[in-house]
Amino acid sequence: MSLLLFFQSPTPSPSVVNVPERTPALLTIIYLSGLLAIVLWLLISLFLNRRRSGSVAAAIPEDLPKEVKRRLGSTSTNRGLRALRWIFMLLAIAVFGFHIYWTHYAPETNEKFQELSYKDLRNRRLSESTLRGWILDRSGKLENALALYRRDSSGNIYRDYPLDKAVAHIFGSDRGDPGLERALFGVQSGALPEALEVVKGKSVLFNANKDVRLTLDRDLQLAAVDQLKGKHGAVVVLNPQTGEVLALYSEPSYSLKEVDDEATWIKLEANQRDKPLVSRALGAYYIPGSTFKTVTMTAAFLAGEQATEFTCSGGGYYAAPGANVIFDDGGPGEVHGRIGIDTAFEVSCNQYFAQMGVKLGPERLKAAAQLLGIGTYDTPAEALRGRKEPEIWNASTDAVKRALAPREATIVTGKQVTRYDLALMGYGQGYAGQMTPFQMALAAAAIANMDGRLMKPKIEFDRPPEVFKQVMSPQTAATLRGIMGLVTGGPSGTARGVFGPVKAAGINTGGKTGTAQKIEPLYNPKTGEIITRHRVEKDNKGNIIREYEETVMDTEHPRIDAWFLCIAPLERPQIAIAVIVEGGGYGSKSAAPIAAALVFKARDLGYFKVVNQAGQGVQPGQQGNPRRPRAAPTPIR
Image (cartoon, rainbow, N blue to C red; front, side, top):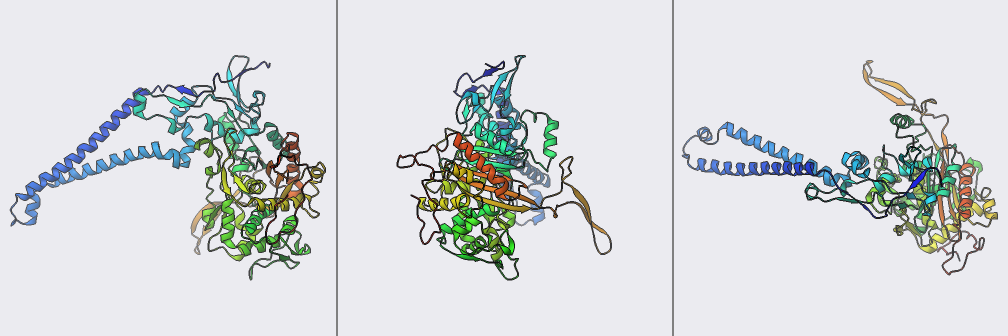
């Protein structure tokens, strides 16, 4: 036993908290009753005054001039008072409606309110009135707890996070965006009783001291941390059959123990170069490069275009007259000839997928993207909104969904999209440049699912699996897995060398490399702040029109990001991985080795001891990789 005493919740049952606010609640009811009485009185008085004015007007002789009639009726003072009554009543209704909105509708519809609701003093007082439960990893073992209470030598009880930085972006803190811990144990506005219920003595029932078991694997999470050490990037690991999140990490991260200090938080928030407070896995946009060919290939199969062949030549591909020529990464010297979709995916041929994007057109790309959870918009302005996507999660409460909501990955499929735009999207450039690592992991997971389904991701262990969309048939999914297997095991696979040891160990995998250039701002090397320059615009006469600060972009040294998607084992995938390394260069050089290391770690943790549907153990290497598909996809047997 450690010198520090471990504290566990005394009971797994939800706690009942008495609300010590009966007097304020009673005053609220009195206020509302008075407000309603005033409104009612105004309505009655206006009605009676109208009747009185009508009776007076009836007694006035008809042959009198209109000006005289008006003076014999209501005076201008009375009319002014009536106008003031109406104005007061409308203002009272507006104030009352304002409170109704923030009480009943904002918790569900207003994103900013949701982020800041934890600062409500009543919510904070209630949630802190009892010890929170422990947070356990998927093993459920107390020794693997991710969040718990300890007692120090002075007898003080404090919340401890053994993994600290490894789970910071998942758990969150009491500052900034809501995290999982606040969502699990905080009192939400909707859980609070109404004023009349408080006066009657109703209490709040919430799961503040109930232990929570997550799907996260502590060892796999630490392996992701170790692989990204010293880099900028993210790792997402899912179980494609259930949607379980096994690992989710973004580097750089921050310490949960340090951000209670406001000065530390301000310093971290000001660092726009490293962005340690941002979860790159969920909230950062990247150009996906060739990993998006996974989406284009899915769209091709869904559209029945999987047997289409295109020519990759030294002259490149011109999508439209006057458009820039599209080459492969090797330039005019990289020539693949006339090839099908399997070879194009294996060698990552840009020209092939550019032509496939044009052939599919915006509507068929749109249909496939929506099945994979990618937002499709008519204009670039709509696609750049950065909407969060809580509905993708399989979770017990809306609060949990909002806490982990990823930024919606988007493409543009409106009428203004040109052939050149479609060509760029086909191989992961242009309007496909709004992807998150989380979204790309979902795209790989849909192919890895044995039934061709995209499962809703979940992080609460006890949640039953839920289907987001039926993306493709099981037979199509099997064929696509075989094509992904060519990348890591085919004779010309772009990740064949890196995954040679994995294959030698008897593990069949599938994957997709990706490389993408991105022009970044220049940053102050000491503070991490963006460098700007002052700009002044003048008219023809030299008069200043406007002044502004312009961000200085590093156009001479674009950042080259490395991607890799991976599924394993190929026979019945238990993991789907997305890796992004900022500035990592080619995906096969920096991102693929991380995925390979995680595959080995998953094997060591026992994830590949699976049984096939027939009840027989699948032996590694038993299944082959299909070559070029023709008219109809063939399931792997």
